[in-house]
Length: 457
Image 1 (cartoon, rainbow, N blue to C red):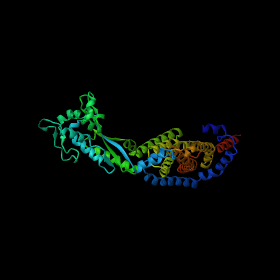
Image 2: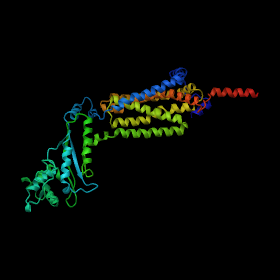
Image 3: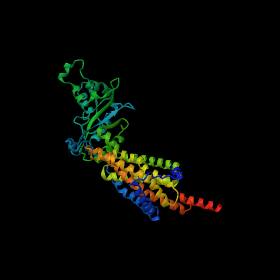
Image 4: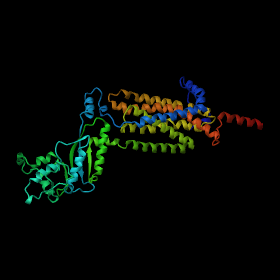
């Protein structure tokens, strides 16, 4: 498109404007010669490298987490209560789940390991046991005092089982299923008998009738309640999740047990989030490089496009770390920024590659062809999302507005100041090394043709 416009002799910058025309004249006559010089290119490159260096510390010292109270309008009293809940008065229900989804679990043969796992999980720095004992412990009180021939219901618990969990012993595996079903059975056929109480009352307190059972009555799925408590920051919650996962992984039941809870569901997303983001960013940058290489047919230009896009995103990432915590919402904004960053690099680079003349002349062409669109697009984008800064829900302002304002500002600076200088510097270096020949300007080509015609005449 650029070449077609240039060959037809049309003005690629569009119609004249009382604002645009003077601005372009200033850019092409003053800014282009300065950015296109050796000094301008070196300074642009130095600023780009300094921007990368300045981004290292904010990224290195980023903090994980987010503030749930940001979801509540500032004038709503619930905002303060939600803040205090997560900071000072937290008590988050969590469950150790025993299951037989992939590999059926024989509870009767794993009683000791189930008790040990629950004790290890619920006795950490930021965890506490639930209000009722483990359902197996509650069951043992029933089984130990249920009449049996020679009292064969119980066997001594291993010494490794923590005190207080199986002081009466474990239930014999061959008696476990029948005793357990008797213990939890509700008198549905005679509801009036339930008025006098029964073992099912204690079973119901520990959720035994909410478990899942096989057709033969065997226990397939069960859970035990404990709480996350005493945390004061997101880092504490993440620490609990990591430590709990390590405990489960070290247990013989690691493939038959897991920990479930709202905190584990939502805060576990922070673990490995940065590595996930880096992988996606790397893939995106490689795609940018490949597409630029195919379309521009210039290895140098493709490298510059990919590097400058990465630089913009890294600067955006660092700037966001100064304002908000690192979480899935900032990652979503950063990955969106990866896609948007190409808008500030591809058009400038394409115009420069196709423009003829010296680096200064090529930059003047670039400024005429691309700067009006970049300026108008950036300003219109900023104005369209700026009202979100005043949204009553802080979450909307922080995660749906600020990141893209940052990207737009950084993109304009790098795309209109740093990138042109780097492109001109690369052209000078390649010409100096003899790797490419400097393109003649359209005026020089026309003069050469006229001179040749005169010689013929």
